[in-house]
Amino acid sequence: MSTTSDNEKIVSVKFEVFGKVQGVFFRKYTKLEGEKLGLRGWCMNTTRGTVQGLATGKESQIEKFKEFLQYTGSPKSIIDHAEFSISDKEADETGFVIYRC
Image 1 (cartoon, one colour):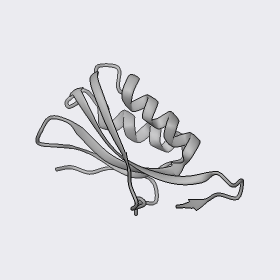
Image 2 (cartoon, helix red, strand yellow):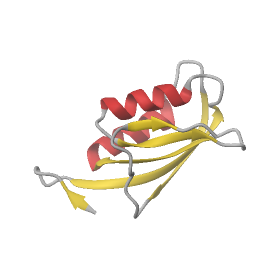
Image 3 (cartoon, helix red, strand yellow):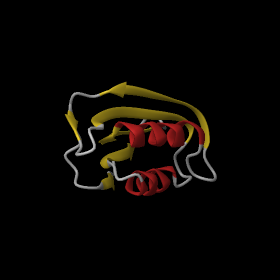
Image 4 (tube, helix red, strand yellow):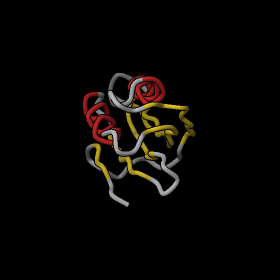
């Protein structure tokens, strides 16, 4: 785990979002929110009908991102719940990207 110049911790979180999150532009809105918050990472659909991903950034921005994933999403999504776990691995991406499965 590293820190920024303002001594804020850089953290990485794995996430998976359950509900009606495929076919409703959830990944697009997730990417936009990640970019807005200055995060690095990725998201993708799964064969289970969920969206999963990894995000790396300032701890305060990761908390805002988690709230977005749990409660906001895309306008047509219906979020049942989201699961999060801390990751030892930082995102390799230079921005926030959508992967296709």
